Image (cartoon, rainbow, N blue to C red; front, side):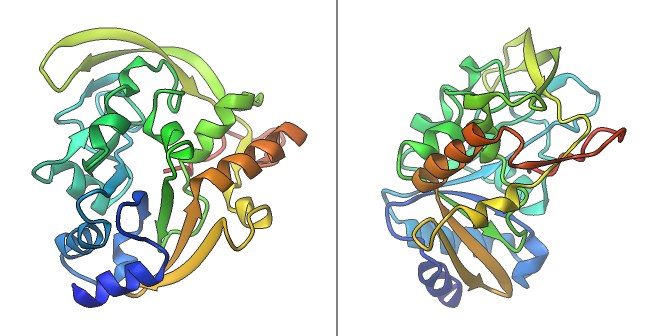
Length: 252
């Protein structure tokens, strides 16, 4: 774990940081996910916060969601973290986030007010305005769910699909129905890897953790540069698929 912690620090993660982790667990080359999580928490320290997306847009049965029991559909580490003792999960039927640490309640507690996946009350949006970082572990730059929060400021034509009604059971066991504006992306493929073309060295760092190649994105710089790019060209982060099926959902 000491080696992992040192690699995490060398990648640009510091004590007191708030970090959202996207990961391919296999890329780390370790067997125990707890080893990575404990190393992250050691580096982040008492005033740091660790977040991971716990998306569930593939839930079965569809349109029914439980904050406490619906599994994450975006990888082994995400699901392990969701079920780990002490982890808190934000309330959203498709784009929830799990977290532990100093700012977890501040970041996660208002997500239930949003009727879109990554709205202004979501942890994805709050990271931009609270000095957050995004750590991409062995998964490249494409599966960056936070980009949806930036897209919501511009609302490009591909972003939303039809309103969808969900039945939700919250963390306290209360069940209710609510209509959300779901993502669309029909006819478009996501290209969030293009952030590397607009972020300088201060906005995008690189490193190695375990056996994984990692990227560290500064959320404030990402927000500023990606929002400007979308305002210049609403299709900057997608490729059209002429007469094609719905674009594959890559932002995990």
